[in-house]
Image 1 (cartoon, rainbow, N blue to C red):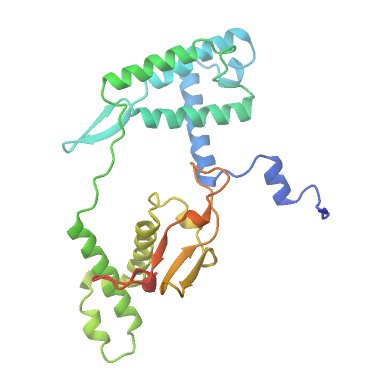
Image 2: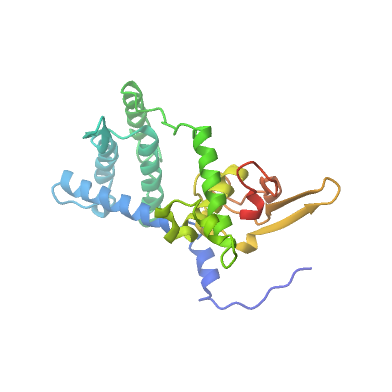
Length: 272
């Protein structure tokens, strides 16, 4: 049977759980910024009536219902097209991100659910209309980066390997020969290049989403594994981690691995 240890009421871990922790600091910061911008919009549109005042009565909530939709209808972002800066409506994905963030922080601070159809009967209809408008303007599709050219990938791998070989040969007779393979402009910051190289290897072989969670990773989260039957050595991520698609954590057994294999350009496991 389990037992319980004694924990004071002001224990930081307990307080984090009671406050519904788990959100990253960057996420909280983004939501507070979103809320601040929305509050400024409300003050301007109501000639001085703040968000908290609107939440006090039925008339205020009805006004807030329309203001929330108008906020997104009038929103503009700055983009660069053909070398020129211009303003246009945001992409649908970006608008959805702000809408979700505002919903969460307003619900937390004011105890109002902006998606509650009984309190805000017009919201869904207005949002669907805005979504349709963004779609007709070609703003509903997500633009993805093109894949990296294979020649560029090989060059990146060669650079990472050359930096690694130069660093590990310091003090050896062939150090200067290996250092010459690293571009002169990068020689004073080879440690930075190697760190980015490790990030590149990690993303490539674990097939990860950009830099998500990378700043939180530690050496203890990885383990060098060896399969004597298949004669295969690799680095495995052995610690579960949370991301936006896995709220309770990923299954580490399903993660990819970084092999100790001699590719023409580098050995990723050895460098990582």
